[in-house]
Image (tube, rainbow, N blue to C red; front, side, top):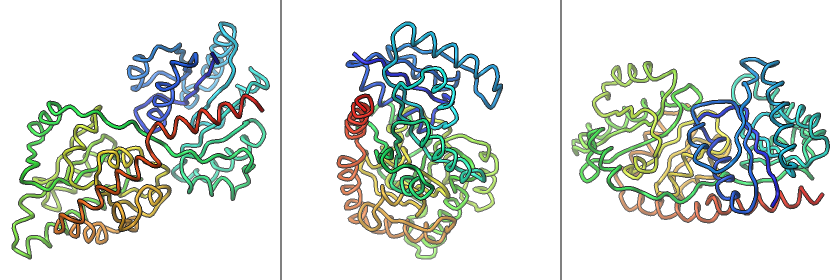
Length: 375
């Protein structure tokens, strides 16, 4: 039984944590797993797993304290049982102290995508440190793979393994609770939905604009469909107040539901007729994969790994980022054509099963672990 140490730079409720959780959940029967991560809102989720967990202060909060706590925790875990493999997620800088502490113990690093103004610097540092310190590197989508390769990451170390999610187990009672809570009527309404942090990079302002255009179109056709149209936005973030204000200014606030953070998202997402991902930057969206696992037609932007998840005119539509008119045009096609929704829905599920099922991700990751340990 190998001892595998997972290290996360934070412990929130995002895609990085979900991917790590899925891997740990599938590995605990065959390996001894330890987790080292700062305290965060995702802590309770990981506490359900029978693994050793230790904490360190986030480096962006207090570098010196965090470095010392990480150093001490790794030493303690290795003394309790020799660590056979380290898997670091997201933060390339964590590879430096781990190499100093544990020497040549095999190390895998997963790049989960970088955003914002410093993204290019982060990619370059990831490549530099990975070439020196990591045994193998995982890219979660082909778009990221190509970026890393172009920036000089050693191709012999670079591996493409798509993010995956478990097939959801739905609870109809929970879904009924959401129907009541958010005043939804799946039998009579067409429900458009998304799930994302409410920040600028997710492009939600353009989704609201597109939804308003759809309303105007349906109203001008006098077909009454706009009266049976809802938009559900699941997530929290700093733009919540601004987005609610925008919905009111667009006169669609009575049709838009801001659902907040949903910890059992598939039960809400199962009510959606169409899933929309209007991101301006994205690596590999787990929310999109969850929608695919629920057989939903998807509208996504042509950024990052989204076109690898959504094949244009096969299981959904790909639109340009920051283009509410294209979002609206795609929504209108799906709203007015139920057979097209059904076709895309079926194809979404087939793509999920072939490429994005967690079983596929875990199998490929375990194969990489074995290859890394045997180097």
